[in-house]
Length: 445
Picture (cartoon, rainbow, N blue to C red):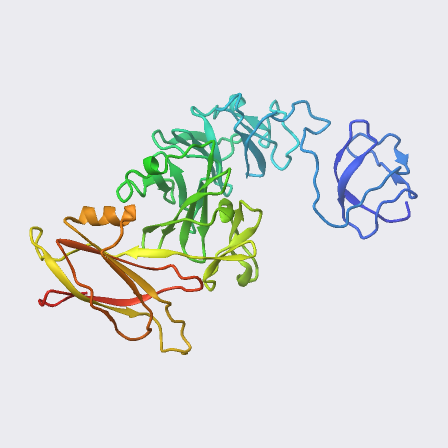
């Protein structure tokens, strides 16, 4: 009556004695001023004019309510639902293990209303009560694209809800052969392409809703067999890194954080395997958009509870308060030494030019570059030796920047592989050029 406190009412308890809402004034509700109900909507509080026995007014977040049906509604919300998203202002639920083909939507703009018997355009909807119907597969992921359409990622198929199911929306299959691994194994790129871990490996649905395109079926045809993922033991998460124009794909073992990850570079259409310290094992990825560009970045929810991000300047990984060295390497294209498949050749020397300016100059310089040679009877043998960790024929490192580092290593064979990298803490490496001298016939660059 006198404090001037006002709020937007969200809900009222069934006994009409408790009001929940969002305060819009600086003045607060207290236990000395009276509150009156003006019979708006044909109902009043009990009593209509009263003095609050208690008045709780939070000045800062978080704000929350117990998510349950509104007291004036009849239907309870689903008792089990392990998948959720927001679509067209509706709370969407699925993943009920007792009814894995079912999906549910609350009333538009009201997550507390689940009365599916309503017939208006904003009505709550359940799959078995809508024209769209249930999904003909086990639902594993709910993927909304703005308010345009909603993907149902299933075990062995992908379905698309176009529009609103209570206002003429349609549910149709997008793929009968490609499924999605789980609730977190997807992301959108800047063009609206949907990337996900499917039953054919890493896949992408292009903008415009074309059929899924397998991206690793040629480059890594045995990716699924090699990873051999147990859905109960591992979590796969995808994240689009807008700053670096690529997709982070992380396969993390839930019990200990051990991981097998990939970076899909959209600039080069290349796939690069990565592994992070177990404490940093990604459980979630989220791109944070800030008004200040310096704060925008792809954030990593890690196993040890830290939230991390990638840094272009740091030269080590942060594991808690400890720095851990980064080990990186690249295998150069396998080279025939004899000129023809049935001939041997001899590598006489190699010259490596590390990238960077002069010592002490303004531009960042490469750290040392480690090298290792792997000769073999065939290109396949060379790749297997590198992959299996076989001891190299010759190895070493060069560190001078902006000058030729000549290595007189003699290697004989039909093919040779050159592995370059760096495993020194606090260092990064960059390569400007490698020249190989084979026999006396000239150089291969």
